[in-house]
Image (cartoon, rainbow, N blue to C red):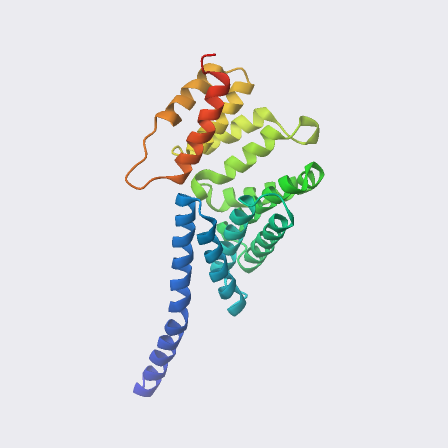
Amino acid sequence: MPIISLAIILLLQFSILGQSQPDQNKLRRADALYAQYRSSEDLSVLKEAAALLDGLEKADPANYEARWRCARAYQSLGDDTKPNAEKLRLLELAIESGKRAVEIKPDGVEGHYWLGVSYGTYGEVKGMFKALSLVKSIRKEMDSVIRINAAHENGGAYVVLGKIDFELPGLMGGNKKRAIQEYEQGLKIAPSNPLLKVYLAESYIDDSRKDEARAMLDRVLAAKQGPQPSPELRDAQRDARKLYDKHFAKK
C-alpha cells in the first residue's frame, strides 16, 4: 500500500476516534450517574445523566447507545416523580427515546427492554384503560428481550411479564397461573434475582402455597449485601418485609 494512502487511512481513523471518544466518555459518565442514583435514590444525579444524554441525542439522533440510556433515565425519573403533568411528560420522553432506539437497532435488547418498561409505567399513571391498551405492546417488547437475551437486566423481562399476568384480571388477559410459570422460568435464567423471588412468593401466597412463599421470603430477607451494595436486593428486601409482615408476622 502506498505510504500516502496509509497515512490518509490512519488520519481518518484518528479523526473518527477523536470524535467518538468524547461521546464514549459521556456515556460512561451517564452510566456512573445512573448507578449513583440507584444507590442513593438521588434524583439530581439522574437529571444530570438525562441532560448529558439529551445532548448526545441532539448531536447524533441515530446514536443508539444514547437513545436507550435516555429511555432508562426518563423512565426512572418519571417513576420517581409524584403524579402530575411533569411525570407524564417524562414518561412520554422515555417512550419516545425507547421507540427511536428500537428503530435504530431492532436487535438491541436494551431498547426493547426500556421501551416496554416505559410503556408499563406510563399505563399505570394514565389509569386502567390506558394500561390495558398497552399490554400487547409491553408483551411484544418483553418477548423481544427474551428472544434476544433472556438474561438481560437479570431476567427483568420475566418480572414485567409476571406482574402483568398477576395483576390483570382474568377477563382482561391476566393469568395468575401463568405468572407463576413466568417467575419460575425467570429464576431458571436469573437465579440471583431477588425481585423475582419476592414476586413469586406473592404468587405462591395467592395460590395457597404459603410454606413455599415463606421459605422464599426468608431467603431474600436473610441475604447479605456484598462489598458493592445491590440496589436490587435493597428494593427486594423492602417488598419482602412488607409481604412477610402482612402474611406471616405474629399478630
